[in-house]
Length: 392
Image 1 (cartoon, rainbow, N blue to C red):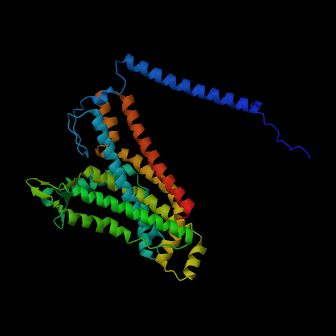
Image 2 (cartoon, rainbow, N blue to C red):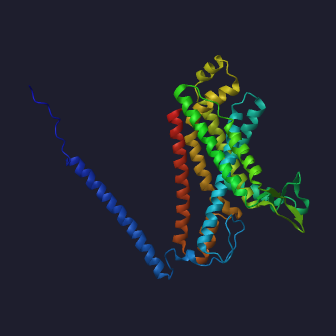
Image 3 (spheres, rainbow, N blue to C red):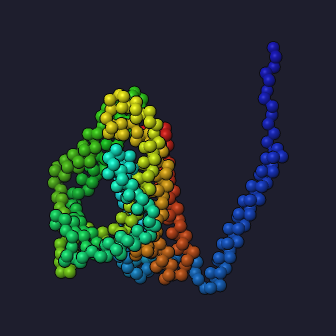
């Protein structure tokens, strides 16, 4: 009986590995020294000029007002509160911009591959116009050339006595519920979760067996039927505050200031042009044989696009789409040029000017944009992983 042959023993401390570790240690040491040198030099310069360092200024009184705030804020609030106001403003603008750009972009991409000559050419003209004009110039166009040139409150553009547009902004009805309104919101959230769960279960069953139950009806049930039932049973009262002209301006309802509306239109139209080209390239990147095979099975053009082309095109669309979402979130900083109160305007502008603490203010702004970018990248990477894994 022969003894088993043992694999040769591997030597850990080889010359190549030691050399690699030494090089990495030297590089990390040099990098640490560089950061220490920059930090010490900056601290010494701040002390020599008598400028206080640290983030203690965030608890001090701000002393300025903000034109648009989704959080309660007055001039007596702190700089820290102003920072969070800027964060929420930037996040709301980014979220609305992503929704607008996605809807317009996918519509443009589908129009670009349409067999209708007029629709395809109009989509091409739109994309070529908005994609080739700088974003900052588009923001100026919407703000100064369009919105600021609208008539005053008494000559407003009115749609069905509900939506009012003038040079003061866009007025819309504001929903208002009583204390029982939280029941409706909880039911709406529960219905949304239920619809998502049933859709995911149906998709998993379809991937395993090749066919699955229909799940489209869960969406109207979860989003409409369940909240409506809760509204009737709970006896909650729902009303809408309609904007009304009182004196020289409209009162009541929701108001979207011209600065936010111009920023939203500029970002949405600019990024939608790029998304339209991404969607077009993704659709045209699907093998022609897939379309011919689906057509041979008797599927119509709409079903072919929905069931065959788009699921495969998403593998091509999602990676560059993530880049456009990142670009939109970071380009919200350009809205400071039209006085929209976001991170650059409030933190790197007013706060920096009043406190003189440039290092801390710029650091806060950089950390915010880095956090938002990493969060968007993580979500899109997860979505890309799901699409590549399941093919849908």
